[in-house]
Each structure stands twice: as structure tokens, then as C-alpha cells.
Length: 240
Image 1 (tube, rainbow, N blue to C red):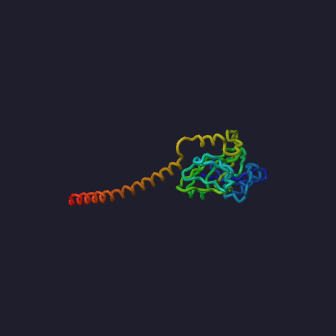
Image 2: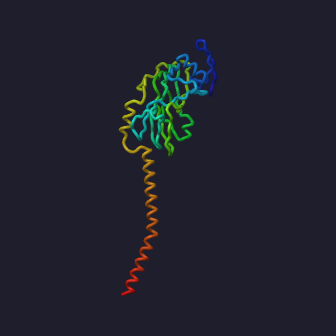
Image 3: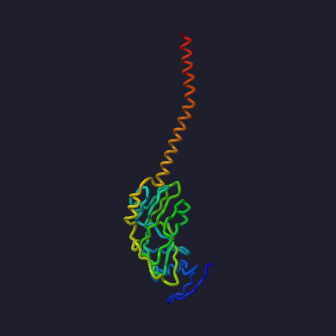
């Protein structure tokens, strides 16, 4: 059940919606939370605010499982994820949450409809500070490109009625971008990526198609060759 509650915080009266002790923040509440430093965000752009979320943009670091080399989307103006490949991308904005705010990451429907999937943790923990590194996978049969600074993922923010007693202080605290161990996992991964499997299957399908074509040609040609051979033998026998 979703409940509605109003309470005073300093000189501000908040109206929030919640289903437990967490409250989903709308556009105006997110903006006020930023003004009050409950949420600290670098490169904040008001145009990225949605009715109940904020759209994060593509930053200057990315890597795919196929190429296995870190790229800078700002140099080309975009980042391309080949069909079937997994990618890690860094957000343009850096965020810091207070102990009373958590975030939930989702993918913009614009890219979901193209066949892109998001592989991220269920939430941004209270107290986390750093750039977001988001996992994406291209489930479509075509390459998908994301322009630099394009809004690609969205984050819902939830405010708790009471701050958590133990804010996040894990290994990703202060995350500056794609970490070395993330690169090692992709670079040292064994075997073919899903994208490479798709390409190999496509090549195999083309080869099988060509082979089938030649088999059909031979099936037509062999009887004709045999018939010609028999005719030649008959002529030779007749001449003798």
C-alpha cells in the first residue's frame, strides 16, 4: 500500500509517498534535496529532471567485452555497443547521497526499445559518493550507439524518514570511473563473447548457404556429365 505523509524539515514542508520507511521523491523534491545537500551532483542539469527521477548522461569512459579496450566517447562523440556485447559505461554526473537518501537505477525506455538492457545493482546506497558505472548489454541484432552526454539511464531517489545508521563505505566509495579490476575481468575473460558467437553463427550460416548452393549445382550437373559420358562412349563403340 502506498501512503502519503507530510512532515516539516527545517523551514520546508515535504509531501512524500512511501511504502515502508522510504519515500519516492518527485521532481521538485529532488531539486530541493540538491539545494539542501541531501543529494550532491556535479554537472547537474535541470533539463534532465523528470517527473520523479533524474536522467544521467554518458560520460568519458566506456569499454565493451568485444573490444576489451577502454574508450573515451567524448573523442568520437558517441559510444557504440556491438550486437550481443556487454559494456561498462561511466556517467557524466558524479553523485553523493546523504545517509537519508537512496537511489534506484533504470534504463531510459528510448534505449530499452532498441534492445539495450541494463545490468546494474538494484540501488545506490545511502552515503555513496562517486561516478556511476553502469553495465549495459546489447540484446538486439544491430549495433547500438549512445552519443556523448546523452541521457541513457534514469535514477529514482528515495528519502528515508530517518537516516541509516551505517552509510555506504564499500569498495566503490569515491569511484572515479571504470576501475582496474573491472578492466581486468573483461580483458582476461576467456572464450568468445556473445557478440562474437552471433557473428560466427552468421558466418557459418553464410558458408552453409554457399555449400548448399554448390551441392544443388552438383546435383544438377552430375547426371548431365554422366549422360554426356555415356553418349561419348556409345559414339566411340559405334565408330569401331
